[in-house]
Amino acid sequence: MSEYNQILYPTHAFPETHPDTLARTAVLFGMEPPPVGDCRVLEIGCGDGGNIIPMGFEIPNGEFVGIDSAIIPIQNAQRLIERSGAKNVSVRALDLMEIGPDLGMFDYIIAHGIYSWVPSIVQERILSICRDHLAPRGVAFISFNTGPAGRIRQLTREMMLFHLQAAGIEDDPVREGREFLQTLADLAGESGNWKAILRSEATRLSKRPDNVTFHDELGPGYSPIYFSDFAAAAERKGLQFLSEANLSDAIDPLGKPEAVEALERLAKGDVVKYQQYLDFLVFRGFRRTLLCHREIQLERDQFGERVQTLLVASALVKSSVEPDGGVVFTKRRGSASVTTNNPIVSLALERLETNWPRAQHFSELAAEIAAKVPPTLKRDAPLVLAQAVLRLATKKLVDLRTYQAPLAESIGERPSATSLARLQAGKATLITTLLHTQIEILDAQSRRLLQLLDGTRNLPDLVSAMLPELGTSQKATEQHVIMALEAFHSMGLLRDSVYRGFS
Figure 1 (tube, one colour):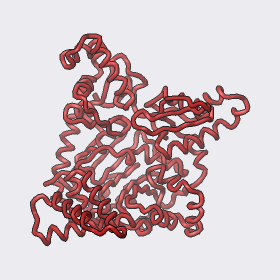
Figure 2 (figure 1 turned 45 degrees about the horizontal axis):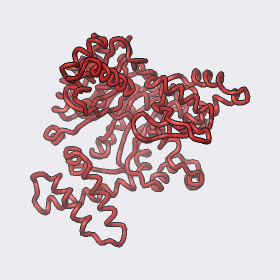
Figure 3 (figure 1 turned 90 degrees about the vertical axis):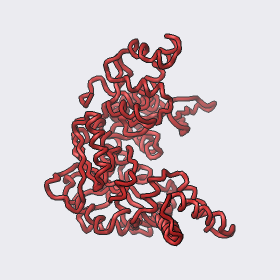
Figure 4 (figure 1 turned 180 degrees about the vertical axis):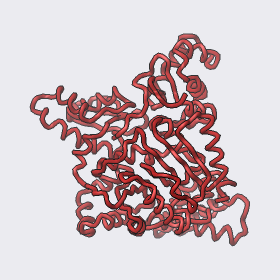
């Protein structure tokens, strides 16, 4: 892994790897996963800690361990841990092949962006670690490139590597590789599909950072694996396929009942075969797969019942009412929206809007809505709401959670952000929220304000501190500060006033 010491690979928060995402999906499939609030988490291939360190702030009573064979990224992560004051996160440089029983047991294990780039013996070792160090009711997350689409990526990679070697190119291989692929795309004949494939791959690579392309496309190893082969390897280690991490992939990947029925006929009740046929149909190239121990009995239906045991949140905001009475809700950040004529759904979304970014237990939400709808709708309110919530969750318009993150209910008298967010605001534009998402804050004055939110300053203090930064009147500065604080709250950057984490 010396190449990862020479050219660093950037890491950041991946929401799909968060323990609560894993736990939520496990609950929907009939498991009783370990409580997230005090979970123990291992990340294999943690790099510089961009994914695992924020988790320590989001789950202050948990314990987080990161390992990576590259020394320099680990040293960078250790410095960030020390500067941020995270007390429940540790990282160390460690070869996977040298891991022993002393590593301990973990409720959740994460291996994101590593499986497809290591030799088969290391892939087998990753699965062995999941078997040996995963708690009995734990969940493991392993992402990997898969066929059929992953084979296209492998093909263009091999073409670029051939060109670099044949031309004797050593300087700036990423630029040379991209230009070569674009040249092929420009020269390819218009007839057939090959030109479109080359163009698609050239466009994909043009949007990726150089250091990512250097490792992912031009690194020493790349081995996409068909899902059926991955599932068989996991089975040999005593593990079983649980689900995909993203609900859209786990519950409603097709959205076409006739396609589902056709695949079910082909698979004849075999879950692995069904998933492999599904990959063929949707031309899948990447999976975010969850595993659990083989002994666990899973239930792959009745999602509407189990969603009622979860917490619910939504970033949707009521934006308009159509002439026919349909209520339009739009996502706070982005253009996604939903329109509903169902009073149960509209009342629920309005209630969740007032709670955001915090979540509310489904049962409490359902009881509130049932008390507001006509008697004829009261009895069916929980089931109707459950079906709607599940449908919206697959479209990423509703969040399902098992854990209430330490998010502020309101701005509060002395607003506070985590020390990690304050550190990030002083160095870059990408800030990690308590929702394990990344927010880009381009405005330098807003980032400066974020750095001031250590819980010691009230609104007048913040306005006084920002006056020289903004160079505006007292009133204008106050308005700017209030608007920024409201945005920070909506983003999930403000922590609860009784936060028990780190300063």
